[in-house]
Length: 384
Image 1: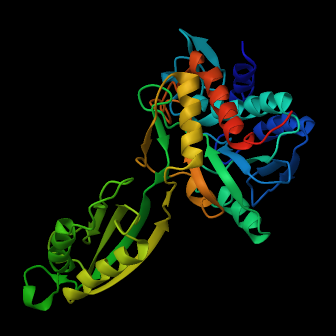
Image 2: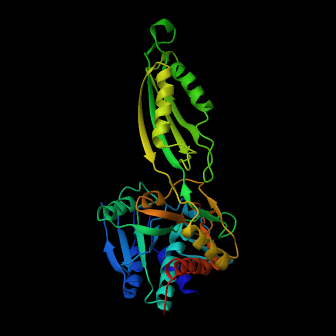
């Protein structure tokens, strides 16, 4: 077995159900310290994180990821125990195999190989690792980034090891993520007996024309990197349980997956909020609206995208597409201190599913991809 596969199996044996770490980070640190990395263990609340850095000069390339995994689901529906990594028919099965312990192992072994070959390399290498990505994500990467930002530390490049590949490994890089803007809208009416409509004010009826207008609104047309902004209702709750009572309020939960503005095309969080309030106000009913926002990020084509794209072509023989589809990731936090953030990792077909797996044949090329990317970005003026 390869060094990367061996280490992936070691990490996969550890039951690091979110927000647990189960010793994964210490296993990584044990391999980084002999390479001369300065380690900062950064525990927030009940969550373990660490930031490691080798070197003090620019450019700084950082590998970011998470050791926590989602729950297994019904154990009797797994082919093999989810925390007993098993190789069968060329596939490595375990919870976290794709999301994202194989990437973590490849981070470490690519760095080991790179430092062994270029011990006096220019620039710096870093890792930002959390155990709070699969959960509520409030004590993990966001807190580490805030601490680094407070002392003025910035990254030049960051690779997040999320499973981004679609049909074959290497076919897709995430160079950004749509913003997520959620609203909890409560439309107020007057409760009363359904047989006396002149004495009630039905909040569902009041809200309906506004809902229709928002459904029909074209929020933007998208841009080079993002599809058009989408507005969707996820829940509507109103009523007392009785069939002869008009409710006093209706609660509507909705969400924008929005296209952030690039070159003047797209939307901002502020513009979407303003447009929603304008629509609601125009219908003249009483309401309250509470917002929740997950920020977007975008990395245009540049040095990092080109470097990892070339590394993928050399390692996998595949030319990757850029994509901003899917949910969100910790890249949105890292973008606050890094202008070039991308995500790249294994196939995403089995993430969060029963019998999560990766192909063994894809593991060593992942290590080579990360190593070649470091070579491209750090060795421009290297002299052995």
